[in-house]
Length: 320
Image (cartoon, rainbow, N blue to C red; front, side, top):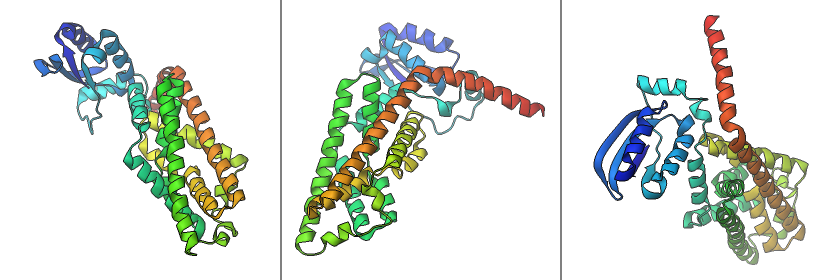
């Protein structure tokens, strides 16, 4: 963590950091901060207690009048770091840094050119998957789609009562999908006019991709599980788990199928795809809200209790 601290706060921050049991390698560079004018602190803090430290720094006023930068080192091969990890409650891989979660949510709620491009490209892949009845392309479209971060941002805004964040996320989801579906519909309609796409290609039996526009009870179950897993992965920085989430929910494939349905005006395909898209988004939002709310209320206590349980288990294994 790096802090730019106004001179008037330096003494309080120095005492806090030096006396903190989960902080090491405290460096103070007096007068090094030019904007804001003041001093620069650098130090390592156990991830498990980073959120608590950030709340204290905010109470002091560093967040408003100074600067706070968080980063994760690629490695900490020294004894003090291992000691901090033992002293801090829980495991660093389970820790949630709420300021990071909220910052990521704001980033995911902003419309960008790349967000819309990825959504359009993913929807195109999904449309081709429908025409060719290719489950491989469906998976590819799911992975390319960028929408889950925005769904998680919507959940974060609702749980933390950040209504502007919730509105921005919801607007980006609706307008993003509307834009992607409109673009792919126009492309598909052009191919319909030249005979490259026919009604039969869209309505014929598709055993590999029929699930895209046939929502059922399992669609909701998958959406709930994927939403819970995705939000848990994002909050605990388990990015590798997100790939499984991306290929679990059929938001992008449903959007691609809807675009083809509109281009060929097959109402059953349009309605089925719209329901599938709505079920998936609603399921992910509900599960995401539940997971974030439970984490916010219980996570720190759960980490402390499981740490004691796991420590007893390790000690028992060592005795054996």
